[in-house]
Amino acid sequence: MNDFIKAYAKFEIRLREMMVAVCGNMCGMCTACCCRADICEEACDSAFLQLLLKRQGFTEFDFDDHYGWLETAGCRLEYGRPPVCYEYFCDELIEAMPDDHFRETMRRAGLLIDDIGRNALGDIHLTEIRNPTDLEQVSVERLFQRLEKANVELTEIFQSLEKGLQGLE
Image (cartoon, rainbow, N blue to C red; front, side, top):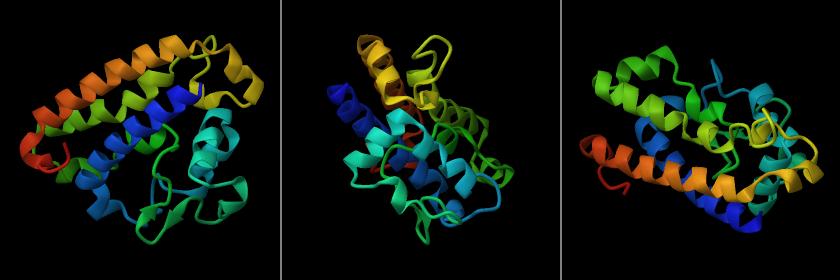
């Protein structure tokens, strides 16, 4: 699982960089819709996300009851965010995107984290596993296959949106 965690963190950093490039100027410390402490709590409740937090030196004691993982520049987590942090785009963000192709491509990018962890343990998503010992039952080989597929797709997304994302790849 440790090798998967390293590879997953590397992937999530790539995805986060793209999301910040597209959405960062509008999101920042916005707590109006998605970036709220109650949503951030999933990172503390998830056995898998806790492993990613520990890798960054965070513990549940670093979690702020009011702001979650947010600070003035946005989320403090480099990786280990709940899938919803990538999936959700408020109406304001959607409207700011240049065209339908860009919007649909960004929506697809936002689902990549969900795709990697879907049905990791029966019908339970990887980030919804609460008991650390249950992680031992997850097929790491299958997770690596999904991660590899997501990496390929993210590279294709970077290429598809090249003009709007210059300098990230």
